[in-house]
Image 1 (cartoon, rainbow, N blue to C red):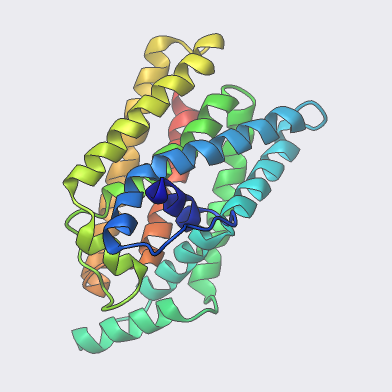
Image 2 (image 1 turned 60 degrees about the horizontal axis):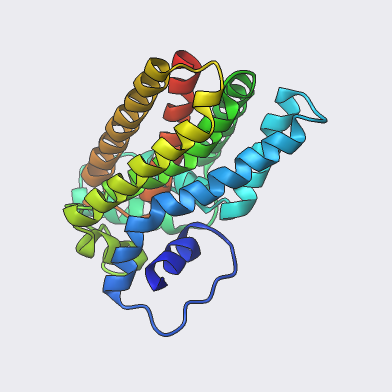
Length: 264
């Protein structure tokens, strides 16, 4: 239970208190339950869209869903996206170590630069347009799946990753999360996806083959996008940070919505 509560504490702004001290193994073990937190967030999004669609258009509902989602996680994954792209935009001076330290300093800076602000704007724009389109067709299953798959993608990027910093929460995840954690998170995500399918997609016009092809394409594309971003960050920062995981989650959500717009 402690690991589950820790997962909610890390990924949401819900005021959860974990009794006792969290060991580093507890922190690493919480990554297994990231898809569970995603399912909880997806249920909130599906509920918000269900209520909103009774009164508003899909366009307005898309804006409401995005606002609710940002409220549940405090927008810190969006902040990670901004910080990551600001740091990636730092030009090389020809001195690798000096460049690395400068990029990490930029990433730690609380203010957003023009590249980071552009990344946020494009992310919000893509999400709004794609959510609006998805809500007009197979909205509920996608809204439930999106946070599950994106949270799962964060865990999948942890095993074997090197921490770019010598301190911080991210360092614990990168050093202690192993393939077994990723496998357990994958099993949970798969189970939740089956439940979502039977609760939502099967009762709509979305057929079995259509949903399965969408799901497989979505997780494959999200995993590829995560691996590409992980490789890019590792090359630029000599490792990953917690901000990079936030960027990976935001990117995975856009990829899943794009897959939904194509397949469903």
